[in-house]
Length: 281
Image 1 (cartoon, rainbow, N blue to C red):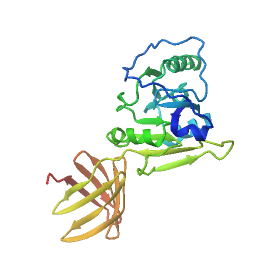
Image 2 (cartoon, rainbow, N blue to C red):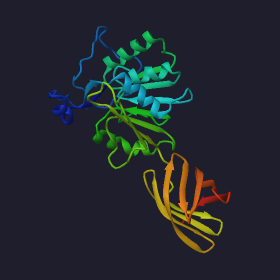
Image 3 (cartoon, rainbow, N blue to C red):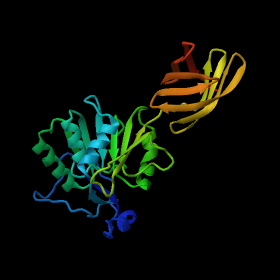
């Protein structure tokens, strides 16, 4: 997978300053961009928003591993470069698509997919990632600097709960990753991948029979109180993992699943099932 990094932010780290590309208007995705048949990409070349540098295949493999991709997934790679992530996923039987602004890269990716015999599962389109619809992905991969990740973050957080997001090297500001992995061997730069699971949005008041669960939410982390039988206690160790909720209250572990405006779960220890509905007030 060839990826691109923001021109000004990476100039010092990469040891050069690439000339900034002129502003480009957003484009609609297209299947057949014009491109030079003998195009060969160059590490550090300028792009619309970023420069392009190579990523180790070992990290591509680690990114797919940490996301636990399966044949049931639909992976979309934002800024797909030479298509390495998409093609690697397709070789695992995963349906995958790359969105790339550079038409030469798109054509190169299509050729690479054909050479690997995965054109039935690997698709590439030309498009601006900030204007493209990637809401149907179950796995989202990217290699962008934090300010670009941050620009995408609101859109990502509106994706279906449980969507897995994996970033090469760069974070999502104060949205802490659920997991990370580091290449320990033969890697001098761009050696880490971060993994997030899009959480369900559960902040507010939930009714549990004659009691209630009040939740505050910061990404996947929760805080709040549980009131039952007239007794209110704070919750702790509270977290969303996609649509799965878990918290501790009054010494008892509660686990459950959010289904739109309902939570269905079980209290460990006592073995009691519980049902909560979102309050409209």
